[in-house]
Amino acid sequence: MDVKQLEHAAVAAQQGPASVGDYPGGTALRLVPGSARRPDDREGAPMAQQRSKADDVYATLRAEIESGALPPGASLSENQLVARLGASRTPVRDALRRLIGDDLAVRDGDRGSLRVSALSVAGVRDLFGLRSVLESAAAEQLAAGVAAGRIDPAPLVALQGELAGLAADEPSEQRTSAFYALAQRFDLLVMELTPNPLLGKAIADLRPHTTRVRTVAHQRPQRDETSMTEHAAMVAALVDGDAPAAMATFRNHLQNTLEAIFAGLTDADGPSSVAL
Image (tube, rainbow, N blue to C red):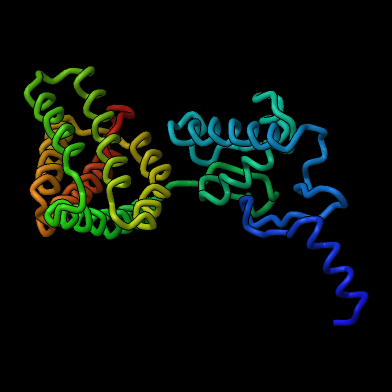
């Protein structure tokens, strides 16, 4: 490197390093004298405001996809989203890039337009196969940590008490809603307490896809009671610090849930939910 090249490198270093990977899709920051900005931030809003709005748009669209308000195959037209959400193009584009990165949106092969990604039997089977591997491993590590005294089981014990109370209640819509909320809290607790943070993150990354399957599935009447029993067994194995039992109960629950989903998808009684 000659003297002029060294001088250019020194100036670039004073302006700040460019980085790749700070944004979805690995978009790189381009250096501009005196500042660093995204190449598509051209609409005059401050960076923090642009990012905040992009987060809001992303959260809204992701929630709509997970709930089924935006069903598989639904159009994600940039122009329509700008008009509907009251956002400028930059945050909408950023949110769409993030949805692509989550595999919740795909480009139409013919026209290049964006749509909500499809669900398939093979995809659901693959999802639960991966969940079984990850979540049983998390359960094993968590139970082993409890047994060794490295992890405080108090949050699990508290949840165990709540679950026992629900199981004793008479079936009702309110009880079903409370159970789904408790099941979600249990999932989050497992991710939080798992000793391996990368494992917890990998499980968390699958949650949007699990939620979509829950939304489009049909519930068999007996599934609530069976799932509640399965959750009680999973929590008990973790509280007891029984790693083999924890792995087995998690795998059993996921396999039974997968079978209930496939059975429910052939049920014509109307859409419902399954505690996944």
